Image (tube, rainbow, N blue to C red):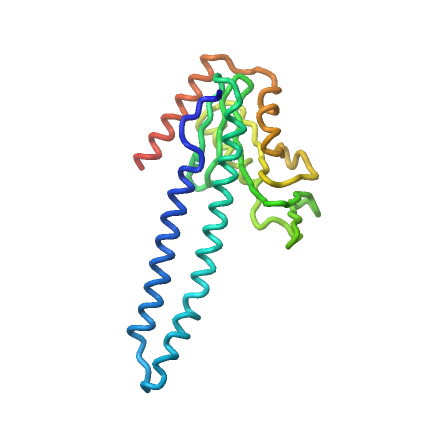
Length: 231
């Protein structure tokens, strides 16, 4: 079994809790502020304050629901990928949610005999990923449009950062799809896989790292995570 050095989706849970708490406070504060303190010229208009409060908090409620859905989807995706990575042998090391300043997070990094892999996880329930006009697009039962964010560009940037600034070794960038099909297997040099394909993809690569190199890379990642916690 692969060695996990932290828990999958742990940071996502923390961020979700923080964001929902702040949004909840904003909703309650807005509603209470309007209903309790908004002046009205006539007592007969007092009931209108409730309507104003509901109207004002509706966008915040929408943001809250959207945030919860997005983060829960990310949590489900990361846990699924963690289950798949667990089947790797114990000479593979897995790190989750590595924050790269000004470049976002890496969902997972795997270090083992076949190299280093930076993994971006995307969960699109019952969707199909394809390319149109050089853009990644997603087709579901409800929509068919380009992705609002570029996961390929994201993982390429973070993999390059790991290579140039931290690990100083080649890092394979991989986009992993959960609950989603794909008509493409590679885009702009980034491999695109379903979650169940990830372990065999990693293990079937040529062996390029010995135990000493693996231990050194793992130690660098551990030290980096410790340094992040002190900031």
